[in-house]
Image 1 (cartoon, helix red, strand yellow):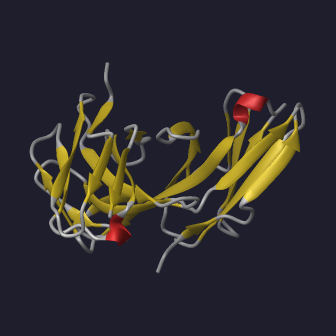
Image 2 (tube, helix red, strand yellow):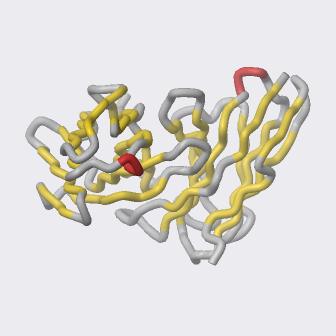
Length: 112
Length: 115
């Protein structure tokens, strides 16, 4: 049982480039989340999807877009990467409200 | 805006002692709280959760206490072991109008266990 799978694990981008971070879960979870974690900091919510077909902004959505492709997949897109987006990105999912969220192993993104 | 925060960024304890990690939250409407452990280079892992209709919940060597009056959450680890060294985060779940439940995290506390 893979749980939450993120790809890629590492990525280096030049300023202005675009890319999509992929996330898939095989636990039949309804809610999915994207967080960023800067060095020595907590996790900040970028976007979330409470159910298939819905997405909503979190605490730090600027510069990002998301797509809930289906119940399993939730992707995060950077249209024009900036150095301030250098961070570790975590995807998570949960079955429903008031249940624990499970996390992927993270994507380490560096924008130069 | 609403936020979840922590009092202590770093906690150093002797192996075998008990550890207490604290967290303050500001959203009185939050009804679900979770503690996560994050080891270096890994994603957060669930430790224990508590709903707002409870004030205490126990797991294996861990206890979470919730004080809704002062909006305070704590994680107690009994007989702390070297393997407990990690960063610990509290998280709260809040409901946004027409937008489902949102899970937000505090800043984290680094627990260091001395042999």
